[in-house]
Length: 386
Ligand SMILES: *Cc1c(COP(=O)(O)O)cnc(C)c1O
Image (cartoon, rainbow, N blue to C red; front, side, top):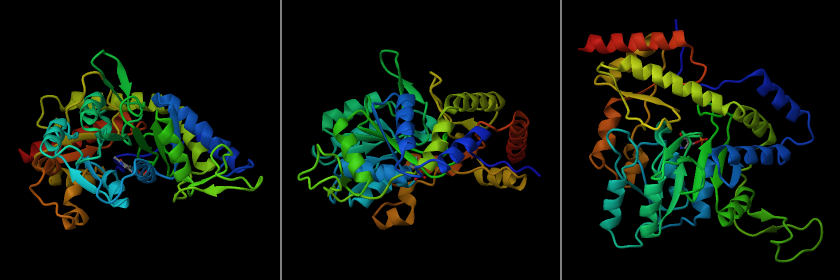
């Protein structure tokens, strides 16, 4: 029987050795590997600063804190995402306002966001959290323009999209998390994502003021930096200047991340090749993949198809040992958000998308013969339905 998950990590002997080296070094945490990973990651995405943290959710929380989200703050995001993209606003007591998605891509629909902004007094909203869903880079240049018109900040949830890019109006590739358009971008290093550290996350930004806040918030709001201290009693002295958290990542995790990062570009190429094989196999069939950018900038964290009889396809593939997944149950329909007043019918495109979406296995080490089996069984199941 097959046993193919929808996503999984790839650990090499080099990865193992990198971790062992750290275990044998002087620092398990707060050592040099964290900064090395941050610097290498910032370079990979083209941002000025990077802050590594315990996981992607902590990254989102720190972003919301650094942008001073508080009770009363209203933030717009998409319902087709992992719950954490919205929850970070709730952690700070802010209000999440979901706007609907585009039908073809399931990305946050900028026209819906614009309508929402236009239909409220200026100053109602504080920020937008677009998500590079499935690895499809959001056109952040357009979102930036809109955000500037209304004085909003942008947190880009780029968990699905390290290495992805969109092409700007001048024909230039703009990589997710490069700091050009979003105030802050976040990534996750959960094992199903592109780069695995076990648990881990990263924030990238070009804004020095936010970078410095994030460093403080990551470690209890405590600093020992002499240039920041209000007093100084001696070498032992530190100050807790704000209420922060312990969201530090360990050097052990970062050693794995650094080693994984060295293969990120080749892993991305493999994902793109797998997506192309799916695309070709599903041409002229009733299986409809999500729309993709024509510039090739998609990072394919997920390969999502839309199928008429999604549940029977899911069940059939599962019976054959192919474990697909649904991304996502619209966040506004989760009981917690329903308690806050959201209802079925509020976001029709997202709800319609959810009825039919299915994520097929997608990870760099998926073998061609495995993919052939997935394609065959998917087609068989769909044709039986007709
Ligand atoms: C994985 C993910 C997160 C959360 O990351 P964790 O590291 O699991 O906390 C947030 N947003 C999106 C879109 C994700 O896919």
